[in-house]
Length: 209
Image (cartoon, rainbow, N blue to C red):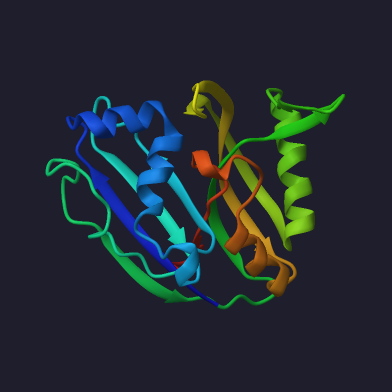
């Protein structure tokens, strides 16, 4: 399976960057301009994660995509990037039993009475991740979860602010079903992917993927 991985380093003093950090839907809209439109085959699945807030230091964005990005296509101010965007194409293979270090910024939720609610309790967050792993072709060997607070976005003609609770999971996983695991990696984990949740980043226990 081939995927593209990009890294964008944004200028924390750029006004557009600051606005997009406060409204992740706007960030998502900007990022999607780098990918093919529907009539040209569509963008495919695009996942991203913000590393840093952009308010007190450099903001780095990691992006995983099915299609090759063209970062020259996006219309942004001259001071938007702190360094030029970088990307690479990677051919991925997985074998049963392989171990990887992982990181996920996730939005653990549960449905109650038809309403999706964020999971705040640590043990319930762990159970949520284990359920995702069981259905996603992998096993969680270790985990460290770090509360990241609420991430917000506004959408609609009359903007409504939506808040999503974020938890960062770090640890080691083991691949159990390679094909299922590849599908999970491609599609992401959990909900609210348009706000930067769900990207499953991997590194070999003894080196990079």
